[in-house]
Amino acid sequence: MRRLLSLLLPLAASLTARAQTTRATQPLALVPNAQAELALQNGDYLLLEVGAYHYTGDDYSNQGVAAVSYEHFWSPNWSWGGRVLATYYGGSSTTVVPEVLLRHRSAVGPLTFGQRLSVERRFYSNNSAGNQNWARLRLDLEKIIPLGGADPATGLALRPRLSFEAATHLRLQKNDNEPSDRFIQYTNLRAEIGVRTGAQFDFTPWFAYGTNYIVTLPQYDSKGNQTAGGNLNTRTPLLGLDVRFTFGAGLGAAGRQQLPTQH
Image (cartoon, rainbow, N blue to C red; front, side):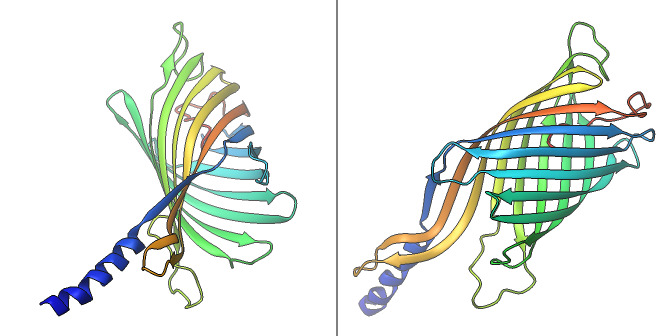
């Protein structure tokens, strides 16, 4: 029995060390975003957007983003669409991400509950990590609060909203030289208050925490204690402002839904 314990205790200590998680917080990122939404007569929309990620820390490269989206509503609750996003990393590299999404929105008491499921393919210009497939699931709750007796659909209103998104890297087969993945690699928790001034203009200040879940190579001292590596959670606070201009023949379309600025 003593011999068995002497074998099991170092193994248990090793497993415990491997399960340790290190947490780190990155500098605040400022995220301005400008959008132009073309409302179509059938209730669909075409969206163009440009933005940036400006990190307040000196050792972090700023990023520029641009995207075009289209979404079709085939019922009051269901829609599907596509999006192509391009991200520029300090002018040195670019990532292009085409995405296909399915969305469902329904009333839960006085709130609107949204679910957004998407699959994307990431193409890297430097191709150091290889092109990757990702899946995302976003859940959100929101409420539109008309102000001063305004029209609930187009008038002055507040739009408080809370959303949570999780993303995972999809791999059918892992090569021996590829790093390990955790089940979820990224999450984003976002709180916002949209302000709609009319049918053609609204803006949304928001705050979020984005977290990357990484596996790094563990390192141990001579006594088997982990000194570095293992699971690493890096959290980045984000402070953003979305500004949206809406125009087109479908502005007054019956039953048209204008989605939150976090499309």
